[in-house]
Image 1 (cartoon, rainbow, N blue to C red):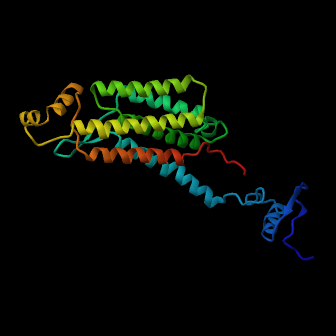
Image 2: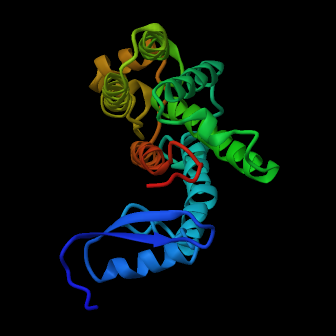
Length: 266
């Protein structure tokens, strides 16, 4: 009997005696039905081929190698600064507030189902998989901590003002009626505003100069007064480029992070 491209119902018996009823759409469907009849369901799912072992390996490389590298790079860049005129690298450790804010941020990710807790940790998983998933979560926590370290001013009044804004938004989202899209919009707006304030406005006021202190005061007293009153550290302009790259990498890591590590059938 010849096989046409017209849709028709077809019953295929498995080796265990069960019957698979499907719809034959084209000639390519014969391979799927034959695989089903042979008991090989790894290649068949609702008329589509699900990832093979090679695809699963690629997902494992992405999840357990590429993502930790991204988050650890963010953790490194988030604390780097270029000091003054000399452009020497300076690494600043995160404050306690950064650790608290990162903890609240991860809780919000779990509540928003951006990360399914039961999809990352389960008794059904092996010890190795649970440990590997924990390592990815630790890398995400370190990156989140350094993200706040990157966006918050180092000290003085700006630190407390922007830190209060961060805490207010995170705390409200933690107890308010939850909306995932609203959370992402509020966090995106807050991170963007903090970056602009720190690396455009405050960085302009505290721009390092090779002039003497007296000459700088005489030529631009407003800038020098702002630096003194706000207690702004002087960093080179390249610091902003480093932190922009760190924020972009963090967002990329969140985009690539799967909500669950369970094998789901399509």
